[in-house]
Image (cartoon, rainbow, N blue to C red; front, top):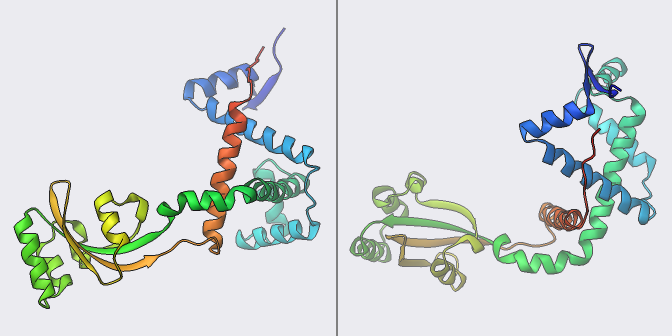
Length: 252
């Protein structure tokens, strides 16, 4: 008995088994199964938690905003866009509504863990702006420090002597996560104040002078950071759920 076509491509039938084989050959089958499992877990959680009460006005406003941003305000053009993406208005509405429900679920999952997770990650979330001069000899680094302490321009010396590409911007490294700094440099930075000159410090066979420009302390009041951490917690929660599942692929 022939298996029912899963897709028709130029009237050529492709069975579900063939589609799975194609995905397996291309290495994309795992991604597809992973996405199916994610959606399954989210829908099950929404069902067990009695779903989420989404205000229809929020969904409708989100659709209006989407149409404005994507120049789909004309009804005909919007219908064409829906058709090209294999949807009608109802399925698109349900898609947008589901995103709101998922965001509410994400917040409920993440909120109890957010403060503790933020504290654990704070060393990587706090940033510091540094400028540096990197040279290959300790004696030169010490001489440059003496010149700076006597009034020479840090920026000018960085342009003349530093071996790193950031010499063209006066040695400015930009914001760096504290947790990514080498231990010796981080210890020096943590006890410094803005404007403080550090070093010479030996790092990977070279010698560096560092100037602390600014500290950028992370805060949960930052909505973008809060959303980032919520996403990380939610992804970890999903991964733990998926690991506990017993999954069998059954294709006739």
